Length: 424
Image (cartoon, rainbow, N blue to C red; front, top):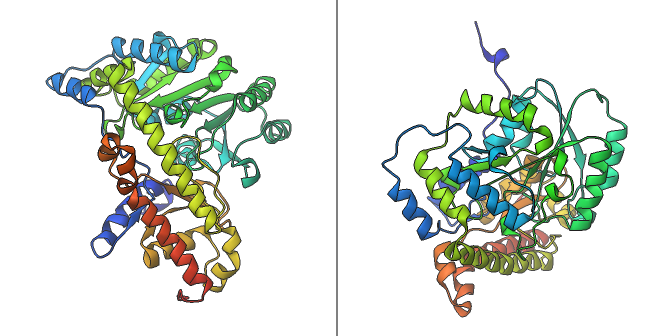
């Protein structure tokens, strides 16, 4: 008997796949790695030292997470985000990615609402959990943000209003690099409250707001907002796999026991040495605070230059406000791209990789229509350790691999406009 008809249609994550393709191509040519969004900065030395000190610890820890870590996480977010995080409502998991899935999996039936564009894994996670998925299409005019009007219209016209509605909102955004102001969050919160929308607020890039001005949705909609974060972006520890989730008081009595139940039957606990090291990071001492401030300065400087260079090349790009992503729109180049046989974002990225050695992700991976010629660019292709230590005069040399990749895009487009890029 063939099992094909019984297998779930889940493919390899686009963000991981582009890294593997880049590795393969890099054996024979220069590749500008703008596809995989991994922090270029090393974990602060004091945090790695704590990891080493606890490397011998092998015992299982509580499913919810080490108490000292949950206390440090709650204090950190109360101080940084001015929200009411409480340690008894914090859940520690192996990355915020899995914590987002666990929230979805805790529901037997739900409707998951996503913004297009949004991170590649949200929709597959919702499908794995067996949920209906709906999307709201954002555009460049709002710099890829969800608007209150969009949300209001959707809520008023839902096909299945009997289902719980879970909105996944990520900001600063992957893939856009843009974020929400206080006024924008307040306006969204009014609609959310009116229609009792549950929100998974994925604030993994919050600490990398370039001006240190991140505002958590939980400040304005505390009763319906579950917030996720972790060490992967602001602490450079993606491979350590540690994320945190805060459950609001209004939902904790019913939802938190289910989340703990799923966690106990899946990952059991996050590795003990990692939890101890994470507690040190979340204590946010002077070393870690300086590290984060320097990250923001570097990413802001590079992000602004990268967006400006793309706009100069006729590729419409919103200036980033946080994280390390851009969402370039090649729409103004549609006619010469069509003449070269390129009509989709996937074709665009494939040709850029093969002909210019530039690895980008197609907008279609983030829920955009395939015909929209948008891509995601992750500007982390530089030596983060050297950048942290560099004097300002030396920084441009360290950031040169990113600037060279942008020049490669510019040059490829120039050849395209001259008819020099071949049509396969």
